[in-house]
Amino acid sequence: MSDENKVVPERSPRKASAKSARSRAREFALQALYQHLVGRNDAQSIDAFTRDLAGFHKADSVHYDALLHGCVKESAELDALILPLLDRKMEEISPIEHGIMWIGAYEFQHCADVPWRVVLNECIELAKEFGGTDGHKYVNAVLNGLAPKLRGPEVEADKASGKARG
Image (cartoon, rainbow, N blue to C red; front, side):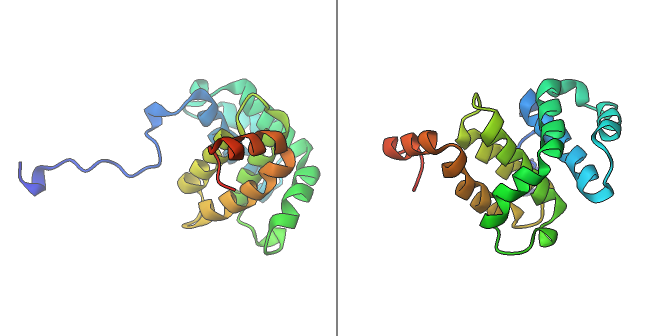
């Protein structure tokens, strides 16, 4: 086969068909949180709009609800957790990265059924797909700094077993 006939795989972080319902819920929650952060829209209005978007039926709507409403309700507490790990003012953080960090911090605190490494990986993937060029590196650094505080025993167990670098 000549070079001109080769099929080049798409370079997206993950194929849409391979995404889990929870991954899709995080994507829709991120879009909703962006509307909240940028447009200052209330969670109910954003929720009604988001549920009508194409593909929402493939998302885990319970997880989406928890992320959207939980992050909006606890935004001040989530910012208080994130802020000490930033190297700049919160206002200088992209609303996409801000929303992703909210999702990560919220899941660390409230979704014990999701391993911390999965939360971290999912947030990095969101940042690669929706954020700026190196936004995923920043999200990774902040959430990696937050994980020991919010999931200490789990992080320590992973370090001890060699599953996490420390």
